[in-house]
Picture (cartoon, each protein chain N blue to C red):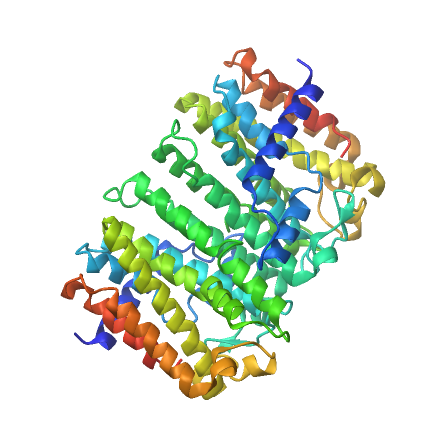
Amino acid sequence: MDIKTYLKNKKNLVEQALEKNMPAVGGVLAPHVEAMRYSLFAGGKRVRPILCIAAAEALKIEPAPFMPIACAFECIHTYSLIHDDLPAMDNDDLRRGKPTCHKVFGEAEAILAGDGLLTYGFELLSLPCSAELGAEKKLRIINLVARAVGSQGMVGGQALDIASEGKDISFKTLRYLHSCKTGALITAAVQAGAVIGQATEQEFTALTTYGNNIGLAFQIKDDLLNVESTTEELGKAAGSDAEHDKATYPAFFGVEETRKKAADAVEQAIAALENFDNHSDPLRELAQYILYRTK
Amino acid sequence: MDIKTYLKNKKNLVEQALEKNMPAVGGVLAPHVEAMRYSLFAGGKRVRPILCIAAAEALKIEPAPFMPIACAFECIHTYSLIHDDLPAMDNDDLRRGKPTCHKVFGEAEAILAGDGLLTYGFELLSLPCSAELGAEKKLRIINLVARAVGSQGMVGGQALDIASEGKDISFKTLRYLHSCKTGALITAAVQAGAVIGQATEQEFTALTTYGNNIGLAFQIKDDLLNVESTTEELGKAAGSDAEHDKATYPAFFGVEETRKKAADAVEQAIAALENFDNHSDPLRELAQYILYRTK
């Protein structure tokens, strides 16, 4: 299989579904919907929805009826970017090669656009759109997403990240921070695909291990790109970790050892799929892609 | 029945349930959990969870197993207060007689505390805690809450409120703003109680009409209190609407006519309950209480 073609096709599917499911701009409530759409359609890679789709496909389930669930992950991911970029948080001006949401729409609209996207994620997850899945399984997905992105997950990771700036933190804390801030939502996207795919308990556990490891690889690679790339290549501020004195893998281990750790995590992700047949090849390729991506 | 005793008892129940369900402060993710708890336990009236409980009771359902659902409304309400108070939004220093969340914990923590509480609301709604209700009904509650508080509901109302400051807006726009910003969550709380209470379609419609009208009465009364009370009485900045040049009912109609409109809304709320027996007396009393409250 050709992962680039796969990614391109799935990205198109996700963007069509987002376009179909997002409220249109218009009417009296327009400005913040415009801000929501600006960030949502700013050219993301759509990694999380694609992981959700690929996990369902690995279990031989056709993902078309479940696109709103996959899209929810992009809404929630985009909300986290908008809020993380705010002046009171990381104060970033550039995201995906464009001015950040608050730079274009102002802080109030950006906060509300994030709030709206987070809420819209839960609206999509609760849509009565996929009778095949059943309400019990949908509730399970909503609960695992809420736990992944809440105060003990993604929100907690961002809080810990901000609290850690300029401080000496242990590697254990950094590892925990990464698993909350980046890993939890990625793992939840894979787990949602597993639930959609009617995974057995063993399959669910294997896909969770896969998700945890690619989440880790993703964050390590982000740390590497922040060191090794230019702002132009990344579409967001390069070198910002060092500038904010943030604890990162390269700061702990140096670049070479960090590369090795990322490769190890990808290897373990792929090893977790050993009992899956070739329907899980996209998941394997996606793990490699995370390692070799340039932005 | 004595509404004051009823409110006191239910408030205690809600606060015990919140205490039981909220994450404790402790461990590495402590600071923003402290911020979440600070605002959640700052002495709110718990009107929304009590409305949810009272609506279930009106349909002769004992609410004890459904407290996490009732509590979700307080988490979501508190998130909206924390974000509305931010410097980029209404820039308020005082809430429920205490310094606002960002004044105590800083802006970053306040944004994250709000994000955490919103997400926690959906976690509580999706808990597998009330087998009596069934997954289909729980999903319905999650979907109606998500729509009520999202970009076309509460978030939209706050965006419209901010966009309207210092502008001449029509009464129609003000009415719409109120129904989104305040009415939608209040109505959703009543509707959730209706779903918990296994309401028929007619009962659901009647309770929705009740919710819409008390939501309106609540906002009109808020406008009145902002004009007529002192900051000390309110526990938040009095006179702030005039200061921010906000469109309000008193600005459109004067104080006397506004009082009449609030009373009319309460009357319509109570009229919507005409086919309900005395189990709905707390709802009737609550409607009156909204009118006569002093903060």
